[in-house]
Amino acid sequence: MLIIIYGLPATGKTTIAKELSKRIGAEHLDTDIIRKELIETPKYSYEEKLLVYKSILLLTKYLLKYTNVVVSGTFYKEKIREEFIRVAKDMNKKFYLIECTASEEEIKRRMKKNREYTDADFEVYLKIKGEFEDTKYERLKINTEKSLNCCMEEILNYICMQ
Image 1 (cartoon, one colour):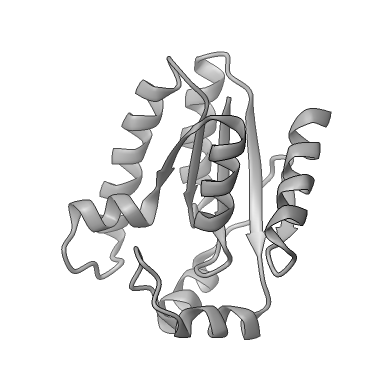
Image 2 (tube, one colour):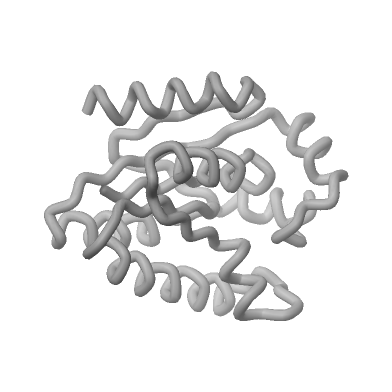
């Protein structure tokens, strides 16, 4: 099974993905963590994003042979999400899309905190928001301003009902 947790910066994707991975015993791959490993001072350019997503796609292909995978990142373009969905389909694996959301006030508040793996600021948020594409696929949209346990319950119920 492949679960794609996506959304704008500071919407809680990494927090949700880490907890979900623990609860279902899946491997977690995160764009922010991979970016930090590959690029010392990221500028969030198109080329950097391409490198990060291609790297995670290769890791996902490998890991899906052996275990469930949760990937988290903005996945701001439908084309990027579709590449991961195609991998899951080609491997006869179920896939789920979970879109994380939060109010801009909450995003600004979260961005003031020191976040371990990302340097994305509100300017990056606005840039990605302007480029963000909706999906044609079924997805669960969750507001991460709710408690983590509440979000997990929604996600686990969604996965079980599919």
